[in-house]
Length: 181
Ligand code: NI
Image 1 (spheres, protein in one colour):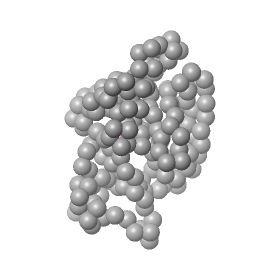
Image 2 (cartoon, rainbow, N blue to C red; image 1 turned 45 degrees about the vertical axis):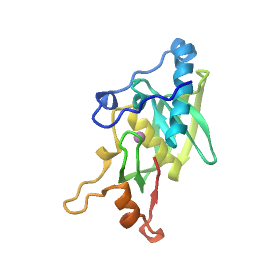
Image 3 (cartoon, rainbow, N blue to C red; image 1 turned 90 degrees about the vertical axis):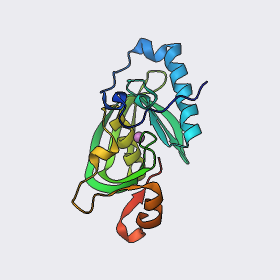
């Protein structure tokens, strides 16, 4: 096991479309090692999800786990939007340290993926979890949360974590949520 270095915004690996894994790759010791390292890296940095490109591996693989959401490995995942009604969350990202941005995404999705054994699985996610999935799986397409912020002169909702905590933490009536990285 090893903690891997996290790629930061500006590194080209974060902008590549990640490659699908073959059944042989999924069974390989290298991928098992990568998954172990990603778990350790995510725990070290206190993330709730981590995508392989964030540790410089351009592969369709991500892990997600927090609180009541058991840690799971998502291989070659595909998202289908089930409810396109949007919800807003202030997002952070281990690859974009010290920043928070308000992003609107569909509130209910379905994810079809392969598990660590290469078995096809499906999960339906809504609310907070739906945003977590969309954020993580965006990484596999070379997309970062800053790409999804709606720019508006004088109002672009992007802030440093310190200023966010001081001025911008949403109140219940704002109808948006908080998402730590
Ligand atoms: Ni991220």
